Amino acid sequence: MYGAAYAEIYDLIYASRDKDYAGESAELAALVRARKPDAASLLDVACGTGGHLAHLKQEFGTVAGLEQSEHMIARANRAMPDIPVYQGDMRDFHVERTFDAVVCMFSSIGYVGSTAALDSTLKSFAHHLNPGGVIIIEPWYFPDGFLPGYIANDLVRTPDRVTVRVSHSTREGDQVPMTVHYIDAQRDAGIKHYTDVHWMTLFEREQYEAAFEQAGCRVEYLPGGRFNCGLFVGTRTDQPLR
Image 1 (cartoon, rainbow, N blue to C red):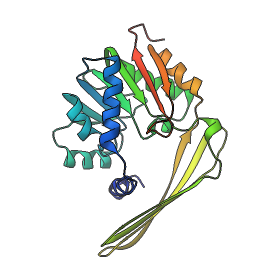
Image 2: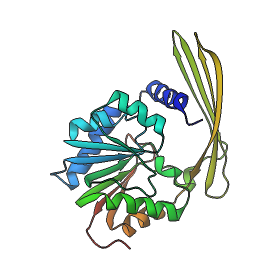
Image 3: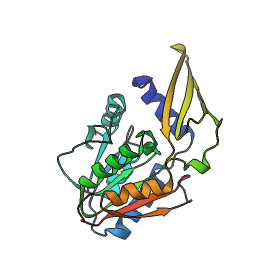
Image 4: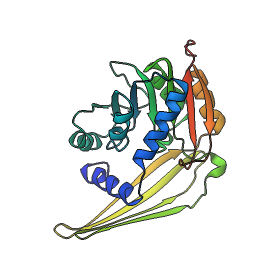
């Protein structure tokens, strides 16, 4: 379902959840500057429609995004024409510059698929860092924190539209197929039904930490706070990548 309709519904759902993009961006900036006080540039990987980028632009002189979906990129470009958003796969991408910080939010890292892909992803991030640069990742659930059979729902209502999202997650080893259904009713367009399956991977804390270390970064895990699954914060040590 990853088309223009999904990108629009994505924004509606997060708006209904009162996603605090400004507060999260301020916290990310503080974490970066605590480790690299002169940080002036940032790359937001898997940036979606750019909800964080507008606020991160106020914290850093130069920001850019990386996103796989062309429809997400199109919405980001319309909302923020002055911020470049590159198309690419986080597991193996190349942007023609480096940054003082690379962040990856929304637990998007859970989509990479395997430990080998996690290692490749962190190396891609590190290759785009300046010396002493910082990587911040919002992980997905650790295996012992996942609840098989978990169901979730969202309801968005406006005068001309009602959008419902429901999901059900099961577990197959370290893989989680999350089946999602959307019902989108619009006054002038009638009712449409979309469905897709998000394949997520459950990584152990130690697997995240090993990926950071293999990418030449010191890493710490910050549990709790405003981020449900905590944050991993890594700092490039300028040692050769393993």
